[in-house]
Image (tube, rainbow, N blue to C red; front, top):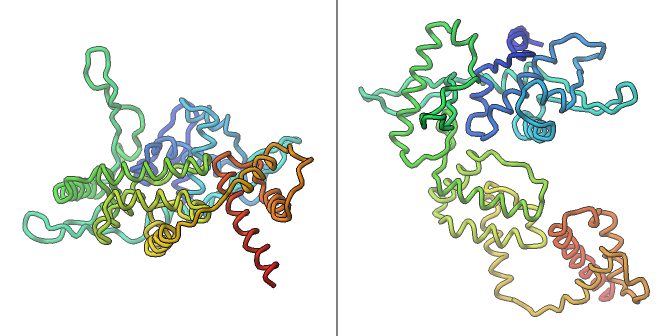
Length: 369
């Protein structure tokens, strides 16, 4: 473990007063849950440095305990945010395993400090290629440590004062070189917004960004995904908006075209489970267009009454006195293997229909042979 991580560990986490290092907040900038994610990471880093009876850096913390430490949130909110933190932002950084402690299953964590440092503090300094006043290239960008302001009106209608989440250590002891870097970062942000006035959401570096309509399209796509998979995790809105913007600007697609093609993929028995982001939609665009047009051209009239009746019998467990076809028996076996009964209703129907199609083709092939 590096000495740098030892220092970061010493500055992270508190008990009665939560002070979140500014770099944590900067890392999650653009996410609506930035403060909660940063607070959870803060506590996990803190507890990873507390000596315990466990070996190899493992420690355990319940969601209730974490919720009590960061305050103002429920254990369920912490559970969802922790899963998002580990899966979306820090894969390979935070390991988890469930082990019994005094006979009770507990979730254990272990952090790879070196990898975390590489994520939070990338080795390469980004350079903003934006001309400044005298025509030279703008200075290197650093993320800015700042307080957030609560946009909640108080009793007299004024905006409430700035609140808690600020890194006092960095503010009090920040070297002049970092202050200058902050000024450079402010200028770079101002330069970015002056050249991209329609940007509604963006990363600190300005590398990824999107307009209000890009963000609206991203949210519409996610809502469609949630219909198929209610457990789908909330995405990184900046990156989703950026991918939609790139489809518009580089691929010459309109928001309408993007949403219409995704809608087709989302209702297709195969593609619904494979196109789960704007980026995947962009990668598979040409193939999806070709397949959607081919299906429209053929448009055969298919009687799905047998398939739908078989699905109802499978889900309800009734109709045992009905003589089932060989196809229905095969599909039922496959559906049991993949756990169709435990899926959400919308996704279960899509999966059943896909299995019916696959088994139907298989049975047809056996008959032909």
